[in-house]
Image (cartoon, rainbow, N blue to C red; front, top):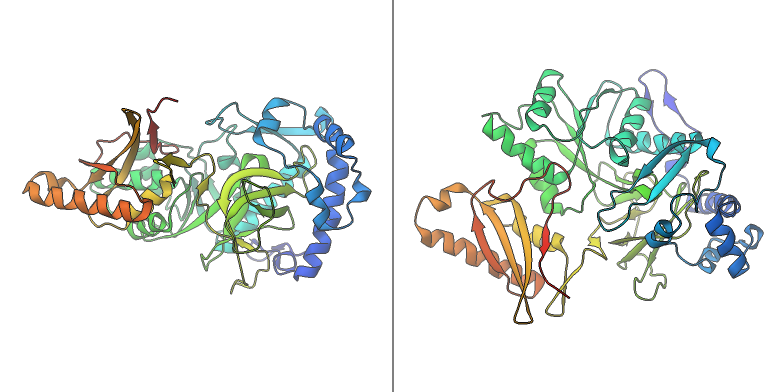
Length: 440
């Protein structure tokens, strides 16, 4: 197995990342059988396997995975805290937790081997995009129970980069650190990257007048237009990162320099795309719910986890030469979906359209109300300040353009309110894009 380049401290696993598909499938089967045997040590899977009459030796092909019912976030919550634990507690070295923004948090336990495997994935991801030992890496993400900060931190340490563990928030201090220590790589939430650019403007500083050449963005769904806008503002390359705490955290899938989908590391995760309604498998290219199985987890293996993230496998090979399949950027989550007048809408659809319209600002808010049993959507959009200082006719023209553009994409006509820059709530964490005032 390839490791570091001892001369420059680079991290690169060519034999794994370019493994032919037949050998990769054999490796997956070997690891799946071991995972099922390990999972059987947990209270939850031990009972489940007895219920369905399954033993590790019964899994003779990857297709046999379909015999096991999917695991859901509710399953994890209902067996809080140790129901999925597959080792003794004295083998554990760390726990992480989900944010719990959609309900009770879930908790994940790691052995030292689990941490080492996760660290390896992050260093693999960052090396792939160009991080090197000479880089200065500023992490603008929350540390603690949230997986984002520590995951990237350990991966960058393995590469040998200088790390600035800045954490989230305190925008002026972030900029000072960027300037003083000549930061070259950052990890940042996309909505915060846009917010931070306004702080540069307040300080009369050019966002491109830094040494940053690479940004890792993730933790919230974002459109390609938003990525392009961030890259245009700062002048760096922004790489999409995908992960979730139940599957370690960041590093499950990552963009290569071609930025055409995220390579999902199939030596660590078995990938399925299922129809979220029928739970039947879908072919490559078809959009559905991403379902993942850990393949090297000791402390808390999870089998067929329903992520609720909507994506698809991108058919074909990647010009970078890596053979691990690519997923498309996450369209949204099944539980992010808004149903309005019988139409299914994702906030990211609205974001994508807004980012296409010149003179629109960096923040927006969707408000859902119900009037006389009729659902209404209002989209508050920040626009450039000059629109409020001249002829109101131009303001109305822009409002109409936004309204018509949204209607063409989401099939309903929302009310559009144009507001001044920085008048909507700012967030240094995940942006709140929807306020739903409707009552059941």
